[in-house]
Amino acid sequence: MVDNACTEHPLFGGAISMTFPDRFQDLSNVREVPDHQEAFADPCRDESLIVELLELKQEVADEGSAVWFLQDLAREQDAEGGMLIEQSGVLEVPGLCYRSTPAVVTSAVGQMAISKGRQGREAQNIARVYLANLRLKEVGTDILITAYEPVVISPFSESAGTVGAGVVSPAEQSGCMPMAEVFKLSVSRFKVNDWSLFNA
Image (cartoon, rainbow, N blue to C red):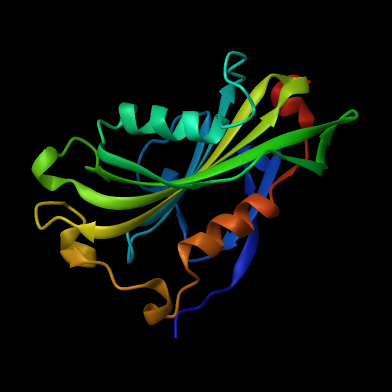
């Protein structure tokens, strides 16, 4: 049975913290990660979890902002066959509050064909992508929490060597917490410890 222990992980030098399973390793130990991102992956399952700090997109409405970012991500990654599976309404998170303004949160789940790194279209994997947009308007920031879960791995993908090609076995069969649960836990246990990170 795989260890499903979850820990509160410090992000951005401890200014933010988020809880997720310890099986996700810090990718900055393996490759360069941009300063505005924190990235974690479970190489055994080719699942990943990314936190991104972006300047607030004023022109994007709260309603459906997660869907907008999901579509933007698909364009950025040159994804094919994008499909929206579900989206949430707008939620206020009183626990995540700057001064007296709570964060506004929306989420969306989609499925798309994407290739890793610079691999071509023949190496595209079908992945389920979970995305939450936490809008901290008082500090002009959009936070994205994105979780990737492979559904089908191409035999030409670099992931085929470690995970194997074809349909990926469900997390439960491997004794792992399902990615949908990892995503919910990460979003619900997201905390800002030091608001000066946003020059607030």
